[in-house]
Image 1 (cartoon, helix red, strand yellow):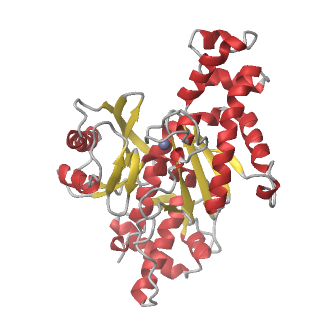
Image 2 (cartoon, helix red, strand yellow; image 1 turned 90 degrees about the vertical axis):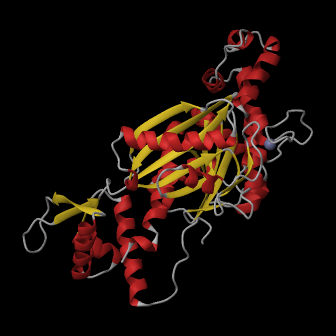
Image 3 (tube, rainbow, N blue to C red; image 1 turned 180 degrees about the horizontal axis):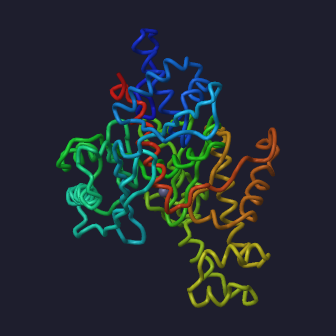
Length: 422
Ligand SMILES: [Zn+2]
C-alpha cells in the first residue's frame, strides 16, 4: 500500500494494466470537471476518440458515468457532441467524526454522493457512559439510520469514513492514543466498526484533522502544489501534511499532530496530551479568552475591556479590535501570532512545504493575522529564501471541512481501486 492507502502504481506494461491506468485517468478527469465530451477527454489524455468512445460506453453500461445531454457547440461534422458526467448516485459515502470539545462528546455525520455533495446530515450526542464499545455501536447505528432516512440500500454504501481525535494508524485501522476520556489505548477501530455494521463496506479511519486538511484539495490551485502543510486550531489544534495529494502520516501516525509541538517549553499551561506549552494549549481560543480575563484590568480603555471583565468576550471581538490597533487585542493576537510563527519555522525545517493553510477559528482573524505571521516568520533572514511566506486561510469553511475532506479522500480511494475497473 502507498502512504495514502492506495495501491502502488503498477510498473508492468501489460495491456490490462495500461487499460486500468487509462480508465483511472478518465474517472479522475470527471472528478474535477462537471461535464466532458469524448473529444475533450481524448484531447486531455491523448487517447483516440474510438478508444474513449468505447470506454464511455462501458462506463455508462456499468452506471459509473452517465449522459449529460448534448453540448451547445458543434464539432467538425456540425453535430452537437454528447456530454457525460460522473454518476453521482452510483454509490454513497458515509462520513462520521467523533468530536470531543468542552466536555461534550458528539457524532457529526453526513451522507455524501460520488460528487462529494452532502445530501444528509446527522448530529448525535454520544450516550453515557461513552465507552469505546458503546460509541462504536452508536457510530454504526447512526450510519444505518442515515442510510434509512435517505432510502439508500445498504449495498450502495461503498465507504464509511471515520475521523477520531488522537494518534491514528490509518493503514492498520488502529487508534493508538484516543483523546476521549476513559478510552483504553491501541483500539482496532476499523475492524470493530466493520463488525458493528450490519453490511459489508470499506471502512477508513484516521485523525479527524487529516480529513479536514484533505479538503483543501477541492481547490484547483492547491491541487497543483507539491506539498501543503495545513494547521488547524480552535479549542483543539491539529493539522496534516499533504505531499503530491497524499497524506503523509509517518510510521506511527504522528505527522501533522501540530497541536502537540512544544512552542513554550517552560509554560505551566497543561495540554490534553499531558505535556506543557504545546501549540494547542497556547493558542486554544479558550486560553486566549482566559488571558484576556486575567489581564483586562490593566487595560480599562480597551474596546474589549468590558466584555473581558464580564467574561462575555468572543474571538470575533478580539479580531475586530486587533484590526483597529486596540492595545489589549493586539497583545492577545501578537502572542498567538508568535506561537504560529514558531510552529511554522519548525514545520519548514521538517518538510519545507509549498504552502501553509490555516483552518479553524483564526481564519476569521483577517489580514492582520496573516500579515503579522509573514512578518515574524520572515524576520529571521535564514527563513526568508525566495519570497514572502506562502500562507493563506482555508477556502473551505470549518464546519464543512470534515465532510468535504473525508468525501474527497473516500472517492479518491474508490476511483483508484483496480477492482473497480475491467
Ligand atoms: Zn499536547
